[in-house]
Image 1: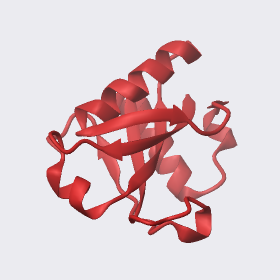
Image 2: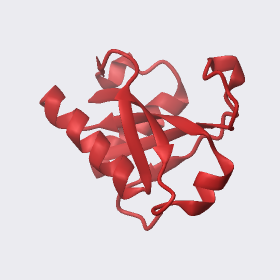
Image 3: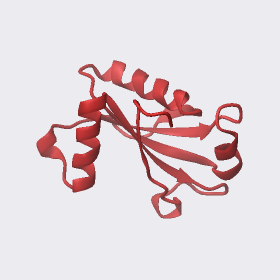
Image 4: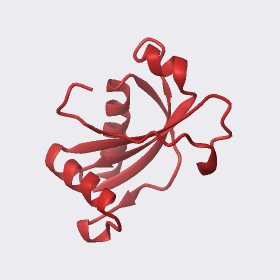
Length: 117
């Protein structure tokens, strides 16, 4: 399971309501795919599919096994991605943010790819 963090911005054509409200997001992509490059491309595809524009990978990509999950929340994301292929967790931040962790308006939700989000 790959965990890939991608800075993204709302697409005014894809998500006009998010474009008006958020300056951007760090999207934690939990991708159940064996090859790292493919997992990155899948992450970008699913971010675009959700009406956002992927910008750049912001952290080193991490390979996790289920035993590596440290919290119940991580176990949930791992389980969802294992079942559905991917789970995206959005940490959206407001306009005028300096994009540091303490500045994030941490609006987190899990978006399963088999639903109509």
